[in-house]
Image (cartoon, rainbow, N blue to C red; front, side):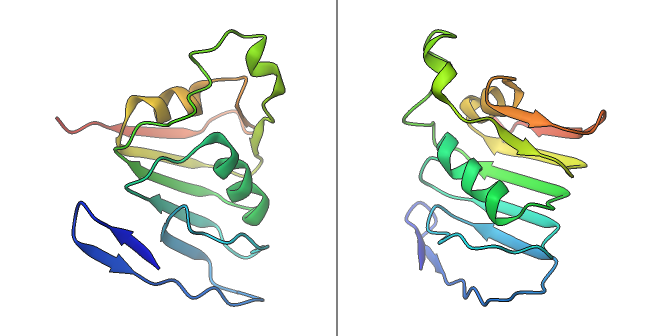
Length: 136
């Protein structure tokens, strides 16, 4: 169960295995992991921060993700980009081998830095459509 205190809402996800759905919407930090080879679109929404390790879990659970949407207005607690390049060497690179579209909307600046850092994320294809939507 995900609780969004800022909105006064809750949501439930039931994860079945094997799952043949092509998308999962509004996943949160409560996502338990697993392997979902048929899922091509994932959207993440959370009031709590998504850390780098969570993005690793997402790419391992959804290896064929083509469209990825991220919504999170909460800053990361373990922001790695504030450290030196040598300190970032221990981070595993998150690989998106099939990603075509990345939407980063209504996010804290940390997530833009997270996805644009070549020390943290790798996009295999030459062109990835990145949509940054900032609401002030």
